[in-house]
Length: 413
Image (cartoon, helix red, strand yellow):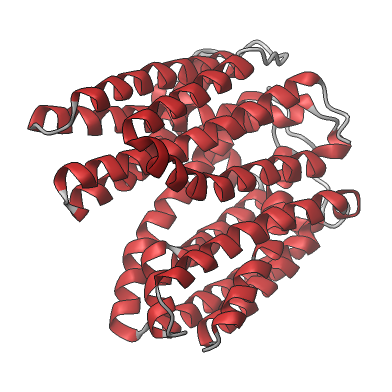
């Protein structure tokens, strides 16, 4: 078991309930909008608005991180999200059949997503403060297991609740999940150092996270790898995967669901394996990242070129093992580099990178798949993983080195 204080358990349980609520309310709104309008465009605008809002929040989050304590920032963003979801519930009761209600719906989605993006870096940066340093890998894998479990359960659970209760009642369920997540989260206490530095300009505060990343060669290497690999993950979006199922393995919509479920199940099982071997991984985080990148490259090639539906299902399941090992190792290396507000700012910049890269990838890879074919798209992605591994190999001494936590008083170069 993790030797963590009780606040860590408040953190991961609150995050799990919040993640479940986030996915369920998006499922609910997509269904509600489609039933009201019959428009695929209006329906697709919901995840688009959410993603773009998370991207914007990554840029402005450092301003709030600099001004407020992380516990206060996380608690207040959750309280506001819960209040806005209550407004969404009332809007669902009223109906969204007019231009004004449609506009209000998307405004609420944007603001809720902005609040989510502001709170996430603060939450992620608290993990090293709530567990022993030698159990960071185990703690990160435990949180990943909880996240993947909530994602695996949310889609089938959402479908069942929609059929049983309808969209409006389901919105109230998600409101209840947010209330529970808020109650758990506001109890977290983390000792935070007072900000002894003079008040920074807004621009300097916004760019500090990026400066913290690029003044560390280890984090710079991980960041460049992230750009390439997050771009590659765009090949697993629903649209490309749907075409793959139809054209590459010749199956129907049901197999699209099977492959998605297999992927999340693999991630969940992989989290258990990483948790089991976390002690061993602590000394080999750099090697784990390099080996995982090679495995992901080969699995993308195998998945893209196979014509067997069962092999595709198997590959989608085992894909989660190197992906989980890589994510947990990278997260731990980041947490070993900085602490407190500096770590939160690093996560804010990193979130901007993830959402921005993935958003561009969904467009470019969709175009590439349409022009050159879905199999060729997976081969292209495998090449990106090869480049990522090459960068890791050239900087292997940096990845394998033990980096001491940077002092909070260190000036940013």
